[in-house]
Length: 361
Image (tube, rainbow, N blue to C red; front, side):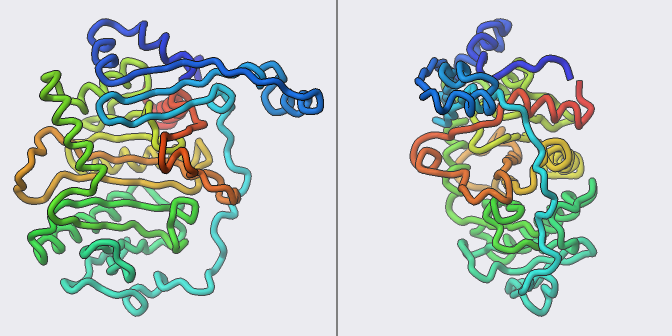
């Protein structure tokens, strides 16, 4: 691959953008670049040299803070972290041969069903979530137990079952019309069962809080600027080299990632084309970046007429890496929960891998 820019020079990259893109970037982003120094005791200098190339590199660090003026999102990048090469995980022993108890092996016998029944095909079957966190909350249980054994057809097959479930659930309860789907892959992502599965939930009254907040923020942006927030967000990422289009789908290595390696796909519909892009991103995560545990979240506009405006709100697919399966340290702490994301992966390195894997120039 050609030389890849770094998040550590984002301020300079933004200044170098042509006028229209620079104006959009200034509306959306604020970038703060800070130099941070420390003093190493003599006993640590060799360790720092082994870890970071030189002790001096550790003693003089660059921190970049990226703030989204529209949504309030923010991320902190440390040059010591962001400039580290991406490493594949060494171990593929991510799934035990057998679990002591796997109800998903016999879903018809060992999982509950919704009052309106199941949706089923050769790729999977739906089941009601036995411990629900909303009144309509269910699963698609994959026929393939191993969640990392997926093909180009798998995401379309699995999420098609989810879409069919949304239709049946909305027909059962017309007041529930705000759909959200997610795939938590393996335990680092919050998946309590190893067997591959995704989840669907359908809200009443209002979309889930962060999605509703994004709708309001995008609406305010349109009122103030006369432009689409989502179009401008992609245009800035594309101008910086952090975004590219695949058909009608727009792919971005997010500049304010909520967790490591966040990629956002904006699509007009959740269909074969956008789900193929999702597959390609996940395959690059798995095969090029060594990701074993990830979260996928798909926010969809409401399924029925509602009072608040949703014009221009796309299907938004978000994917993040949740870290090494063998690591007992959580990737979420007090900063992430209550303050701002702290991120090690460089979006420019992520997008370079995606471009190479997906054949995008």
